[in-house]
Amino acid sequence: MAELDFKVDSEVDITDKVCPLTFVTAKVALEELDDGEVLSIRLNDGEPVQNVPRSLKEDGHKVLKLLDNEDGTYNLYVRKVEEG
Image 1: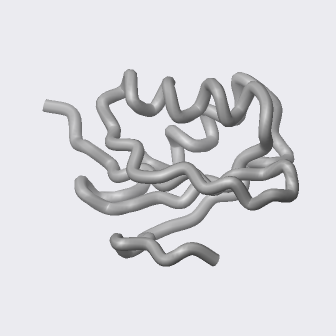
Image 2 (image 1 turned 135 degrees about the vertical axis):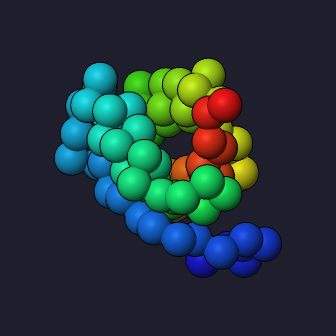
């Protein structure tokens, strides 16, 4: 596993979800965190890896890293940014 230069506060696996539930599930998990905390999201290649990072960025959150697990899944690391 790759070294991360930040602490992961929570994790969610959305590999069993399909769009648009992938984004909805990730968004709900982020809402449960405090401002500045980091969420690790495990997601599938294809639509989820294309859409979820973009949608979270559009919501104002900071995408820190996207790691290819080389098994058809990715880990996306996102820092929650409080709206305001």
